[in-house]
Amino acid sequence: MVKLSTFIKNMLLEDRWLLYYLKNGAINVQALSEMVRPDAEKYVGHEVKQGAIAVAIKRALVDFEKDDIPNPSRYDNIKYDVVMKNNIYSINFKSKSLDNQERTEDKVNQFTRIVSKTDDFFNITESGGEYSIITSGKNQPLADEMFKNEEILSRFASLTAIVITFQGGFLETEGIVYKAIKRLFFENINVYEIFSTHNKLVFVTENQDAFDTYNLMQSFL
Image 1 (cartoon, rainbow, N blue to C red):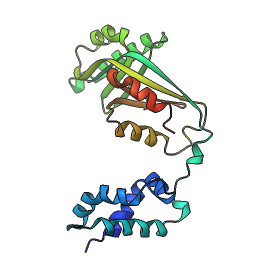
Image 2 (cartoon, rainbow, N blue to C red):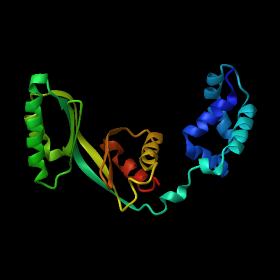
Image 3 (cartoon, helix red, strand yellow):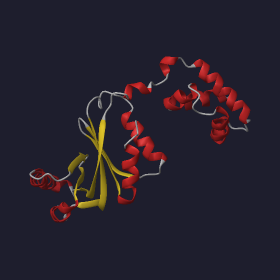
Image 4 (tube, rainbow, N blue to C red):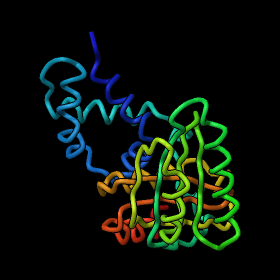
């Protein structure tokens, strides 16, 4: 028999921040119980009373030790700046055939050499023969011309890049990327591209979501 307690514990283990805020009284147990009730009933296969879910949550909180709960203080020393870059172009493509892969790679390298000589926004990702190029909009004509004979998977113009530059501790601190993506998810913001460097985290979004993304990233930690 599937137990309600198993569903509750799995829910809390999958979202340690939910566990943290419940443990510290920042989330109303009764309201949460009603919210997750449909999922709980689907999991156990029968109707479940809201009160039973609340009891299961309270029992689960007793079972979890302090060490299982994330500590927000780990982010206290993480400092960062957020910059918004407009007029971003995205093109994704691959070779039309295996015979053309070397030629495609040469063109990508040539494009990289040209753009790298400028201060233009630029990032390139390759995986399994597929290329994703994100660059300033003024390089769109060059990109379209150089890769016109490739198999174009997608291309988007007039995007915006939100660049988060950290002063330290970014790569060594777990959960930062998760927290940023979670904030964007809850606000229904679609991300076209996400990438990072040693001290930068970059989200590429539609122009219409740019200011919301910028404002959210100002205080996502």
